[in-house]
Length: 131
Picture 1: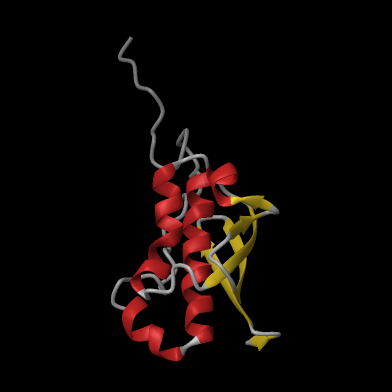
Picture 2: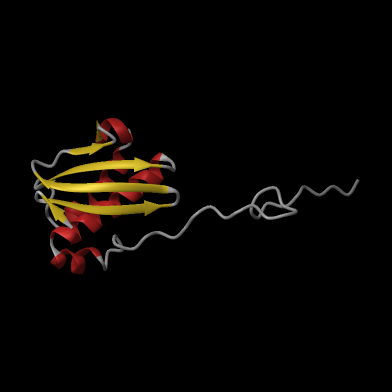
């Protein structure tokens, strides 16, 4: 889906949902109206977001605008990465052959398991004492 030369992708990870737009530009990354370095605070998370752009060799060609809700900071970074990858495929279908084998187009299904009856958490049983 392209409107005004912009391409859209939705990324998800755990409970985070990222709405990502790619627009032709200088490589500026904005997350919730803040620069990526200011929003993420960690170099490793910044690198995670850039992986799809580095893999497709489009690092300085697109401006990234992301709006994200839910989850923690690491989960949000994973969702943005997924959204960028999907937006790149919307921009050019040939990127699917690059991003697909790297696993960037697959939603990570791991999420917190629900609490079960008789347990303190999902799998943590109650403490046992003989006396």
